[in-house]
Length: 87
Image (tube, rainbow, N blue to C red):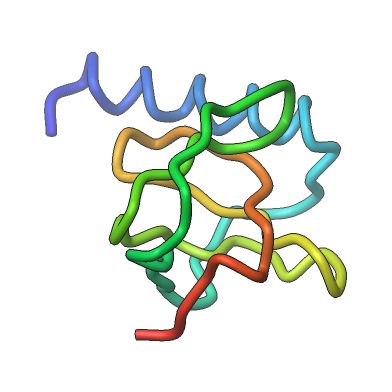
């Protein structure tokens, strides 16, 4: 990873922590897959866009309805638990 890429990732992580009021270091708890039968949705505000079969990194289990996740493009957002499957 180049220095430029590293600084870009650090900036994205700081923006995530500010936007979601996330305290502490960002660590991946587990990975989960978006249900292949789920409908694809565009992301809005703090929701992550969903693509069928996509593997997401779980950052935090926030409540009974949503999970805070990161996708392969290092975008962060909430995803409904109903569309997530364990790997």
